[in-house]
Structure formats: C-alpha cells, structure tokens
Length: 285
Length: 310
Image 1 (tube, rainbow over the protein chains, first blue to last red):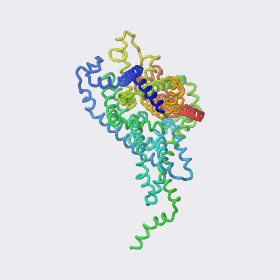
Image 2 (image 1 turned 135 degrees about the horizontal axis):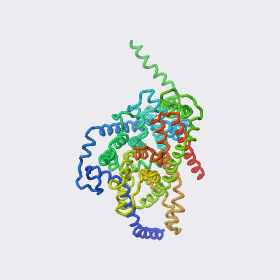
Image 3 (image 1 turned 45 degrees about the vertical axis):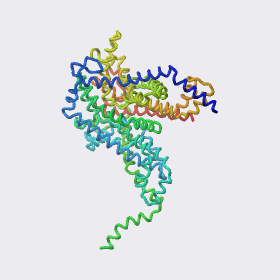
C-alpha cells in the first residue's frame, strides 16, 4: 500500500515538472488572451478620438473619456440601461418565485395529475421561442401590450427549465423537516418559503444567474415588441445606436463597452459563485 | 352584533378545519399551481397551436386570417431562398458544433489540470460568454473591416498576407459570423466540460495508472467514454443554439440583413423578415413550424442516444 502511494506521488511529481505542462500552460494563457482580445480592442477604441481610430495600438496614445460623455450625454443609454436592469430583475424574481413554487409542489406533494402537469411543463422546452413570437405579437397587439415593459417581460415570467431545475433540488430536501414544520402547525406556504427554500439556495442562485443573464442579453423578442426608443432594452438600443452611427467606430465601441461593463463588473465580483452556478444549472438542467 | 361577528369569520375557518389533512394538502397544491397552469396554457400551449393554425392561413395583420390549406408550405418549398436559408442554417450547425466542442474540450481537458492562476485563465475564457451578442456583433464587424480600420486585415497586411473581404464576400461571410458565435459560447462549454471531468471518480484514473496506461490511453478508454452524457448534452445544447442563430447575423449585416446575397441568412432571420418586415404572418408561421420540426428532431436524437447507453 505504502509502496503504491509512494510511486504514485513520485509519478505525480514527475508529471508536474514535465516541460509538457509548462508548454500547455503557456498555450492556455495565450489562448485566453486571444479570447479577450475583442474586448480589449473594444475598450481601447472607446478611449480614442475619431482621429486615432486608425491607430490600432492597444493602449491609446492619449486616452479620453470624450466618447463616453458624448454617448451617455443625451440620456438614451441611461434609459436603456435602466430598462434592461428593471426587466431582467423583475423576470428573475418572478422565475425564482414561481419556478421554485411549482418545482416544490411537483416534488413534494402527491396528487393525481402531478405527473401529467410535470410532463406538460417539460414538453414546453421543445417549443422554440421563435415559433411563439408571432402568436405573442398578435396577443400583445390585441391586449395593448406592444411597447410596454409587461409586453417585453410576459413571455419569460416562468420557465420550464427553471421549474425542472428547482424540482430536482427540492427532491433532495428530506421530508422529515417538512413534516416537523407541519406538526408545529405552519401552513404549506410558510413551510415552502421558510423551511424548504433556504435549503436550496445554491439552486436558487444558479437559476437567478441564468435568468438574469438570459434576459439582460435578450434581443429577439424585445426587438419585435418595442417600437419607441424609450422602451428599448440595452441590446436593442446598442443595435439601433450602432446602425445610426454608421462608421463612427469609436462611438459604436463605446456603446458596446457600456453594454459590457456592468456584466463584467458583476462577474469579477462574483466569479466563483457564477461559475459554480453555471456548472450546477448545466449539469442538473 | 357580537354573535353575527363571531359566526361570519368562523364560517370559512370551520369549513377548512373540517377537511382532512390530505384534502387540505390537495387544495394547497392546486392553489400553488393555479397561476402557473394559466401561464403555461395561455402563453405556451395556446400560442403553439395558434402558430400551427396560422401557418395554414394567409394572415397579414390587415385582413382577418383565412384558411388556405398548405399553400404557405408549397410556396416555401418552391422558394429557392428558403432552400438557401435552410442550407445556411445547417452550415452554422455542421461547422459550429464540432469546432466549438473540440476546442472547448481540449481547453477544458488541459485547464482542469492547471493549478497556477487557474481562476484567472478560466476567467479569460469565460468572459466572452457574459457579453451581449448584439454588442459583440458590432465589435467583430469592426474587426472584419478592410485596412486601415479593421484589426484583422491590418494584422494580415503586416504579415504580408493579402486582405480578406470577410463579411463582404459570399464565401467568407458565413464563417465570419460563425466565429463570434463560437467565441461567445466557448466559455459555457468549457465550464460544463470541466464539471463533467471532475465528476469522473479519481479512482478510475488511479487504477488505470497502476495498470500502466499512458495519458492517451486513459483519455480514450476512460475520460471520453465516461464524459458521454456531458458531451451529448453539449452537442444538443450548442446545436440548438446554432440552429437558432440570429443576434450575430442581424447585427453584423444590418445594411443588407442576411447578405451578401442571402449568403448568411439563417432561418430565424428569414422568419423575422417575413413576419415583421413584409408582415406575411401566415407564411412566417409556416417557417416557424419548420424550425420547430428541426429542433424536435435534434432533441429526439438526444433522447435516443442517451437511451442507447443505458
């Protein structure tokens, strides 16, 4: 036994200092730097004047925030930023609430029709959004939802993916805890909210990250359902702003940078959390 | 007064108290599900059936929809642009999925063993996943410009390589749009592959090493077979992503959406134009049914492949 352990350790050490490791590490680092090159050039160009755009050095000769002042000056981007934040937050809260509630009900209550409802919800995963946009558009124009926050948000208020994810996790919550709470006379809603929910916090955060990111970057439906610029989300705003700016690349890069900075900041602050959330949702989902 | 007040609130509560525990739980369960059932019925199922129905009509937003049978489908299958678009959509899939999976697997495989600056290197690969496709489409579009603006062409010219037309060329435009799409998705795939690699029990590797298997043999005989569920998930996930590509194409070809000469137009962009530029809602609905069918086949293939394993 000890002999085996020793050889394994020796082997491990030998592996670790092999030149192959160093080459692999260097190549990985170079690849990673190539991955962020578009972002670096975007930031760099957003700090250049229109005259300097042709100078492709990564570090601007005379960095200036002029473009940011210009782009943010008329308040449009601020508005789109707030729209996107409000929409993504509201949809995320709705998903955390309803997907958890439905996932919990399907995992922890026994009643006739439970399996049918689960399958029905799961089957909606097969239906692509693109197929629903035409009926949604018809529905929105009949109900006056075109060009409103609700119109942008309503299709995503609950998702089958989130429900499935939460159901998987609630199945791991021991029934004893819930029974004990029942004996104490708590009602079912309180049991879910106060006892079961705190036990699946990792799943909730994974769901929240995915929902927020998905809605923050959503483009197709907001593009269809909004007509006035005040209601654009940030991606739709960036797209329309860039198309208007024709070849003023320094302004286009500034707009793109403004759309990218918030998510990058959030990521830098919560990196481990987000990576774990993506792993969790990807593996269970 | 007092007695009237006492009975009215007691009424419902006495009714509730009389129910046995399982009935109470049943009522709770359906109360929890009530709003979600309405949501799924009204915003998922009804629109699905409506899409099928609209695909059999000539609805154009102005006049009420009239049943025209399969005329939309006949028109679509006789339309050379549809077949061009169909081909493009599959080119995105057939080129995009294998390339992105191969790259992300190789990176995940090596990154998994890296200990020095692991978090930093992982972050470099993951960051593009957090970007907005609409914004990045414009960044890449700028990259592809001719000299002196475009970064890539300027780089090529310093190396003495001829300039490339990229988005302006019928042959290169589709690949040029595919690259940012692959780029943006790599981070997600690498993270999922790494999670899959970590889920393989280390005892398998230890046993293999004691048996004297080399790295390559371990990769082929242990890692790849045990990673199959992860791989199948990623194949389906990225295939669906490429089949639904829209944001990048729309933003990189705004002056001639899907151009040049429809060389980059995917099915979703055709649907968007048919529905929201020409307002041929019925015809567009028929195109969405085709998209639905393709995605359904991909999902069923996944189920089939996974079942075979068990």
